[in-house]
Image (cartoon, rainbow, N blue to C red; front, side, top):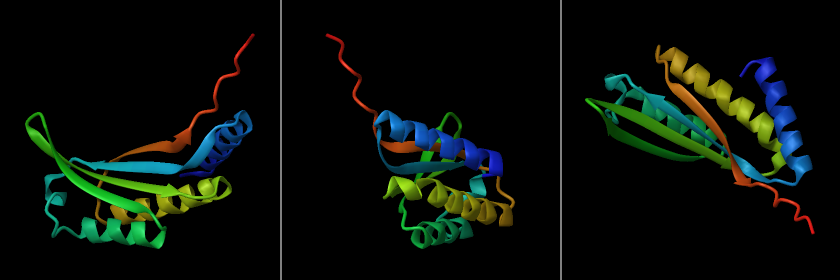
Length: 124
């Protein structure tokens, strides 16, 4: 995450909390299309486990068949104090970037919040 991404995330989290959303955490998914990453013996698995352990994340790994190829997905999720959400997401993002860059990989990253939106106001 660069400084603009962090600022945007901070603003979004603040708006969601002010709206009354129940933010409990975030989930990140990294999808790898490089077939050499699919075996469990590839060092990516150890790197992802290290990122998860160091940042108190839950961790899931799966290889999926998609059209004529397989792809590898890692799901990492964090729950905790919403005031720590942005700083934790930033640390995780930096650690993931360092890990994948060191292996010359180019995954697709997806980010979402864990929680529930505020209930809409009912008009009488």
